Amino acid sequence: MAKSSSGFSREPFITALLIVTLFCITQYSYARKNSVLIYIRDDVYIDYLQFVADRDISLIDNFSGKNIRRDVVDMIIAQQALKLGGFDHRFSYAPGKVNFRNTKMLQNGKLLISFDSYWKQDALPLSDKVYISDEVIRNGEYVAGIYTSPKNKKTLSVKKLSDLKGLTAISTPKWKTDWHTLQRLPIKKLTREDSWLSMVRMVDIQWVDFILMPFNSTPDRSFTMNKVHLIPVDNIGVVLKDSRHFVISKSHPKGLEAYLAINKGLKILRQKGAIVKAYQQAGFFIDSNIVKIINP
Image (cartoon, rainbow, N blue to C red; front, side, top):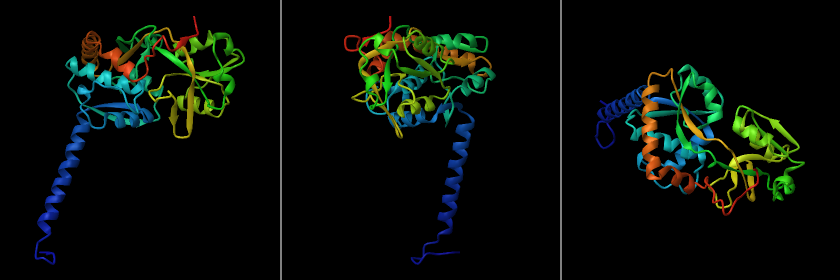
């Protein structure tokens, strides 16, 4: 039997360590196997982890601070609503460059729910394949900022609707509400790009003048991700006239259970004023006395 210089036998210790390690691996594999797998865009997942910081999701009631954004608030509200509604299953996450692929997975039952809420206009065409929750963001509550490069002086000088003439914007028709809103603005050109990351990069390098984005929670409301840095036009907003909802797969074995639970939980959160409070604290719901809405 191998012994250390102090006479202590290391073999029982090593054996115990191996047993503990194997137990942890087995427990992790079991937890992942018996949890509901959710696909999350990697940048959102990173902000989510940093904001939550191992806190109990159900106990979070302050949504101010770093790394908070509309997508992260959506994730937390969805989980709180599910829990309040009696959905007790655990979640595990698979981050990556997911975007519209999630819609296909919802339709075929490989994804239970999108924690990133959908515009109603985008959700309704999927209604034969998905359940549509009650509103999480009501019609008229979503006010977007006109985000551009800090070097784009022409865009930053916008004060009224007519100032948009000569400017270019970027979005995707897959986001019907965003696309239709931009089509109604007096802009020079609307460029299509289906990748959100590509959109912000194109605005950052000034290939396109601006993108509509939810106001960020940073003190100056700026958005920064890796080398991309965008800022909003001061005190100017564009209202997107639609409501947002969570969509749940009808083909997933837990779909109906999740749908009934999230609606029950959303009602509870709405009655408590928790939903509006969360988006206000996150800097997403903007004081209409400060931000001027320029689109009719």
